[in-house]
Image 1 (tube, rainbow, N blue to C red):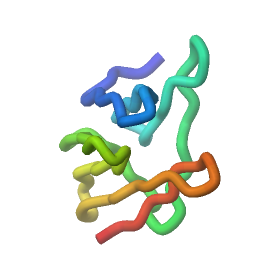
Image 2 (image 1 turned 45 degrees about the vertical axis):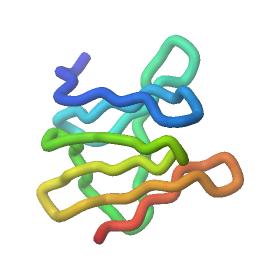
Image 3 (image 1 turned 120 degrees about the horizontal axis):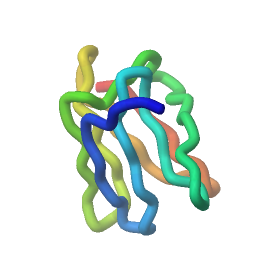
Image 4 (image 1 turned 120 degrees about the vertical axis):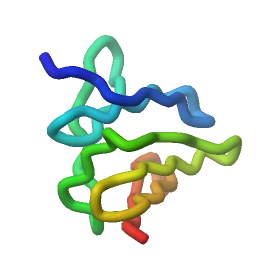
Length: 79
């Protein structure tokens, strides 16, 4: 178990959590860790938000990570 710093729900209804060890999403009844291509070591403790189009914004120690759905997977870019 880990503390959750931030929560948000995206446009598809997926619940996202920022934890001390990274970003996680709710899959059924469990949270699973998310590996962020192009945005390693994203913690999400500073903030998580989403817009109506389903884009996920994660404020990190290294900048803003922006995630979009591609073929059912969230693909992130660190800005």
